[in-house]
Image 1 (cartoon, helix red, strand yellow):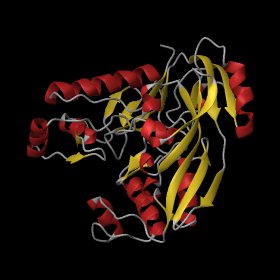
Image 2 (image 1 turned 90 degrees about the horizontal axis):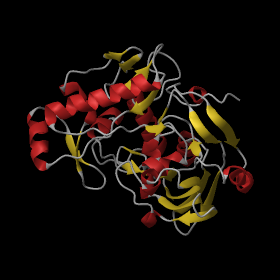
Image 3 (image 1 turned 90 degrees about the vertical axis):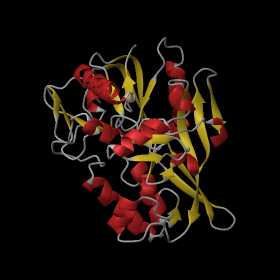
Image 4 (image 1 turned 45 degrees about the vertical axis):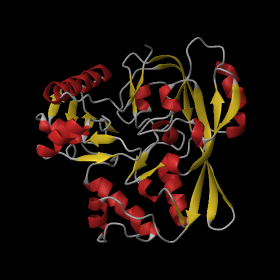
Length: 342
């Protein structure tokens, strides 16, 4: 297996790791952790690599590629079902399992790349659902205390695309999660108008579970939110900026200029990062630097091509954020996680 990080990230950027380990057997974690416990640099745990920007110089320590798979379901009283998934399981596979078993709670996360273990780090969400809504517990490894521990949602500091795991990178590694889903033939009510339109149903309706997941997949593909297997937009890491928090005064200015403003799932007022980028002159297909462009369908997704480097990609991120701040006073914060020695 290649130790080049470019071979394990969807941007296909990044130099070599000093050591790259692949973790496939959940029972073998204690032995694996023991082999790196005394290294001076904390190991970096890599899932699908779909939200990672690895440095051109690589990583001087150990990278652990989380590849454990497995999903089990345990019925509880009534319609509740606890579903346990290993951290290396693709999130798309977990959504497909839930839909096939008529379990509602994550159907609107269909089409999101990455692994189950990465989802709580980012508090992954879409179309009104987020992973923290249905998490009941997580099994993690605490690198400071050198032991396995259990987290419950109240202790995870979940917020908009963040968590305690994102705030303290390297402290904990998620090994498995347990979700509480609901047995139902119907999806959760549709709360996004464009999705309701795509499904041909009124806002607030509850479409059949499989129809909802298929509609989300189609909508994500149409709007450039999916990760294509090939073509000009294949090398990407999804949205490169979080939708920024804004003040009421800033929201009035954005609305007056025709921009989108909405409250996130935690009640914080946010502007559309994609709209802000377009407002300062960028658009789908914009060439931003040698080898770095906006995707052909979406300004908020940057794509890498021949000639791209992690350094040039990061320079573009800083330049775009500066453009928006100079024009609006609103800061954009990058979403991809930097895999760097610094």
